[in-house]
Image 1 (cartoon, rainbow, N blue to C red):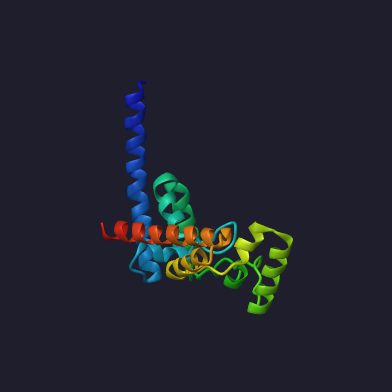
Image 2: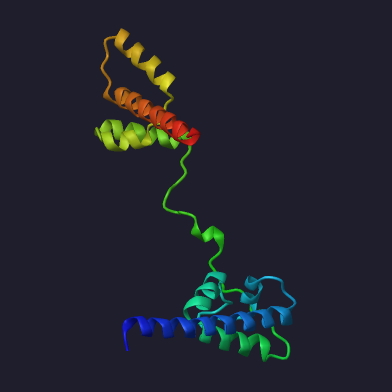
Length: 177
């Protein structure tokens, strides 16, 4: 038997299986009083708990039609009164929030920034420094130049503000196109 013949037989089987699954799904939808295929999902339990996801139903319809047929027949068609399965227990939404950051008061931040300055820790200083607008960075930089002061932190803030401004402009342009 050639590969083409095997493929043709497989297609005939799948066409027959597809027609069969369509009939079973239509019968089941009618029994539950639904209108759409996805409404069946709530009646089909999963081994992992909860009911079948509509993506899973769709995937099984094309890749495992016989298995899906037997599940639908068992829990909907052959059942006297099909029951809606409770959804799978999931973690509460609040528990997904990141808890690794802390909220500090302004005084606490200023004290930590001062400690970082005294220790000479530039990295911590840049993390703790409040983000400045481009305009305020320019004003402070010009003021520092007038007083013949060279402050690396101020220059870093300016560079960061310019980069943020450029990023915003780039995003605006790409959103328009």
